[in-house]
Length: 111
Length: 112
Image (cartoon, rainbow over all chains, first blue to last red):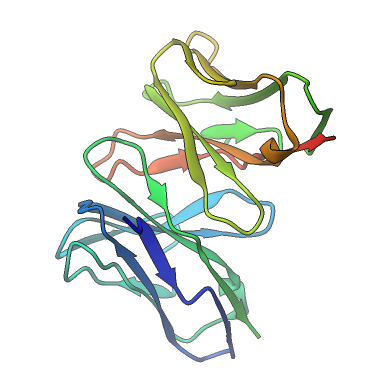
């Protein structure tokens, strides 16, 4: 079991560029989440999904989009990258219980 | 007021010390609590979870919940340098997505 995997590990974007952060889990979890973590700060929820085809906004969704076409994959799309989106992005998943399991993160810098 | 609050630290202790990490929460609906450990440049790792009040022990770690004062604690006995990390407390709200509300984390440094 690989758990939750994320690609890429690191990325530098120029202002206005777009990219997709990939997240895959092999635990057959229905729930998946995207968080961002800024230096010295806690985790803020961007989007979440309760199953394939169902997504909803979290606390800080502006500037991001998601899709969930399969149980395994939950990509996060950044359109028109801005310096404020410089952060570490974590994907997480869970089954029916409350405990979420996190991926290793993607470090994104927008310059 | 944030729903879950933690002292950011850093908390510096000598190896072998007993460590107490604490969170306060404001939402009375919170029933279930989790502690995550996050090493530098890594993803959060689930350490322990506990439901309602009381203690739960797992090796050197004990999680304690006091619902009357809305206070949760994580105790680490015989602390090791490998325990140096940021510790995050979290609780799921009563919402459709079981979204977790996280504290800001406490950075712990255990010195040899």
